[in-house]
Image (cartoon, rainbow, N blue to C red; front, side, top):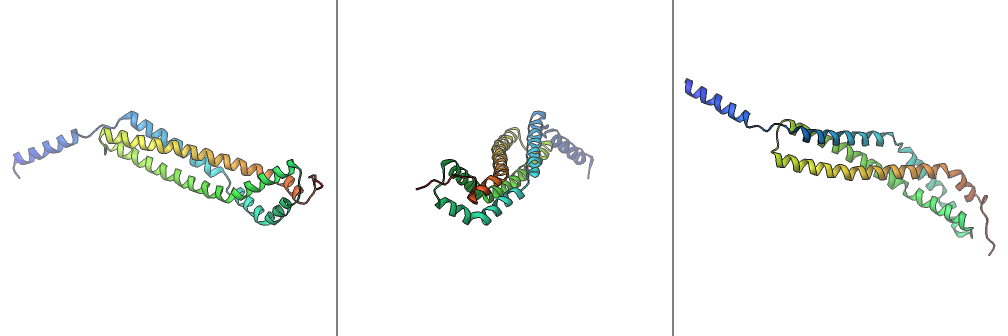
Length: 183
């Protein structure tokens, strides 16, 4: 290899390296913020005990016939509303558990994608427009996931309330604590 070829090769490599995009600090900050948000969502979902949903499902399986029997009785409005609301919530518990698991898996996947996006931005793997589009897409996904996490939290609280009121419902199912109306 002669000197001219070696010099030309060095110039080409230098020019290629100099043309790389410099990572945009603002874009990196946005992605870091999204990563933090998704990691916080994952931590929150980890703290919510899935066993509560399964306890509610087991109560429904155990007491379903008792509910149906009581629904055939004439009940005062308050007792009927309490039993019907409780029964409906117990019926939804298994679906809530599945939603919880799905949202948790989705937030974990979003976190992985965001970390990969951050690495790609640092490596200048995108041009400016593609990077902005990818960040916008991930920001929109994160907003949707945050709403889904909030719904999971609401479902969890509902299930907690259902389990906390189980003693009252047991009393109503046994025929105590309600006022049977005379036909």
